[in-house]
Length: 126
Image (cartoon, rainbow, N blue to C red; front, side, top):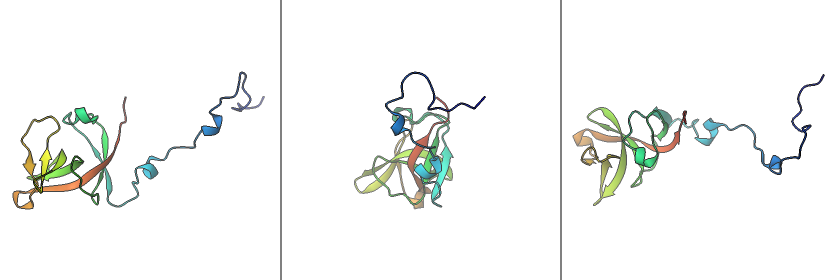
């Protein structure tokens, strides 16, 4: 008896059989070989409205370019936070995803720094 061969089945051949791709390499897709890229796990539901769930893994890039509206990992008084970055009147502000706190001015003198820009999200569960 021989093993199963996928092209020897009954019925008709799938019209999409020529579109089957090989294995998906998330390291390559998310460019995780870059020394500036790190996975960061989310705790909380602050950015539920943007599709970020508790337990999701964000891809953070410490060399990423800042853009208004982008999610960032920041440090506020030594505590890491996830926030939306906004440029308002030529100053950068960190804004909560659920309006649970007032916007925070990005200023190293105030112990507020941006650590990384979020470039992707991976969800391990449905």
